[in-house]
Amino acid sequence: MIHVEEAIEMILSHIQPLGCEKASILESLGRVIAEDAIAPRDLPPYDNSGMDGYAVRSEDVQNASQTHPIRLEVIEDLRAGFFAKNPVQKGQAIRIMTGAPIPMGADAVIPVEDTERGDGSVLVFRPLCPGDFIRKAGEDVKRGDLVITQGEIIRPSEVGMLASIGKSFVLVYRRPLVAILCTGEELVDVGETLEGAKIVSSNSYTLAAQVKECGAIPMQLGIARDHKEEIKEKLLQGLQADVFISSAGVSVGDYDFVRDALKELGARMIFWRVAMKPGKPVAFWLYEGKPVFSLPGNPVSSMVTFETFVRPSLLKMMGHRHLFRPVIEATLKEEIRKEPGRKHFMRAILSQEGKGYYVTTTGPQGSGILKSMVKANGLIIVPEECEILRAGEKVKVQLLDSSEFGVLSPET
Ligand code: AMP
Ligand code: MG
Image: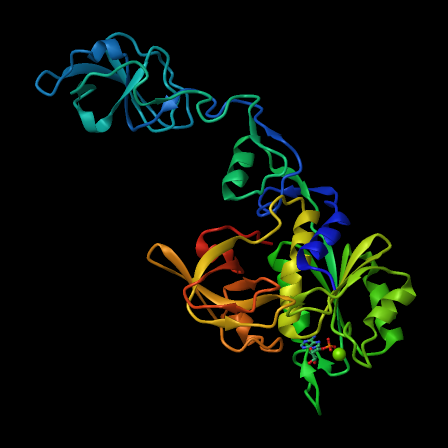
C-alpha cells in the first residue's frame, strides 16, 4: 500500500495538459486561457466624460463660486457615441453625457449638480482644475498591454476584458472527455425496474456530475456485469475518451474482474491500493498512454477517490495551476477515534462562527452512506498514524463546496 501523497504524485507525473481549442468568450468561462491576450488599442479609446455635466475650459471657471457663479454659453448637446461638431471656445460650454468624447478646446467637465441651466447658457458654481472629471484615453488599458496572461482562469471579468479588446473567440485548454463505466451484477440504471436484489447505479451519476463540476465532459458507458469479457468490451468502447474511470470490481472479491480485464487489454498498472479510508482498493493505470482510474464501488469511496485523484488530474489536463481544493484549519467539536495506518477522509460540516471555523462529522461514516456526502461541505483529513482527535483540537478540513466560503470553483 502506498501513501495518498505518493499516489497523487505518481498520477500527476503521468498527466500533461491537453491541447488547445478556440472557444467563444462566453463558452470560455471557467476554463484556462492558453494564449496571452494583448490589447490592440487603448481603453478607453479617447478622453471622455466621467460625469453628466458640461465640458468647459477650466480657466474660464477658475473664479466660480457659490456666491459668484460664472455664466457660459451652451453651444451644443453631446451624447455618448458621438464626437462634438464644434470646439469649445472662451466663454463657451458643451452639454456632455457620461462617456461622450471630450470636445476640442475643453479640458474639464463640470458635473451637472454644480450648475444651473439657463436659456442657452449655464451657471457654474465652482472652479475646476484641468482634467477634472475626464477619463483619459488608455487609463484602463494601454495599446500593447498584456491584459490576461496564459494560464489564468477566465472569470466574468476576463470575459468582459476579452470582449472590450475585440476578441470574440479565445484559445483555451481542451476539456477532457471522460469515459465512465460502472461494473456490478447488482446494478441497474435509474428508471429501470428494480427487481430482486438490484440497486440503482448511483455512481454512474455522481461520477458524471463530479466530472462536469470540474469542467470536463462525462461520457457514460453504462453498466457492465461482473464478466471479464463484458468489462473488456466496454472498456474498448471508451477508447476515444481522454480519461477512463471504472467503478467497483477492483477489490479482492471473487467477482472483481476489473483488474484482470485491464491487464488482459495490456494496460500498465502504476499502483493498486492506497493507505486511505475510504477508498483503499483504488488503482491507477496507463492504457495506450491514457490515464485509467479504477475506483472502488462504495458510493462514498468512489466520490472521495475521485476528489483525491481524478479531480486534480482533470484540472491539470485543462491547464489549471491550482489542482487542489482549499484546506482550512478548524476547531473540532467532537472526539474522533480511528485505527492507525490509513489517512481518513471524514465527511464533515464546516461552519464559520465569529472569526473561527468549527467542524463536526456528519455522523455515521460507512463508505456506503452516501447521505454523509450529501450533508458534508468538507472532509476532515485525519493523518495515517493519528488514533484520536479530541474536541477543541485544530484539524485540517478540505473544502468540498468552495463557493460557500468565497472561493470560486471552475464551472462547466
Ligand atoms: P465492489 O467494489 O464491487 O466490491 O462494490 C462495493 C459496494 O459498492 C457494493 O455494495 C456495491 O453494491 C456498491 N456499488 C458498486 N457499484 C455501485 C454503483 N455504481 N452505484 C452504487 N453502488 C455501487
Ligand atoms: Mg462488485
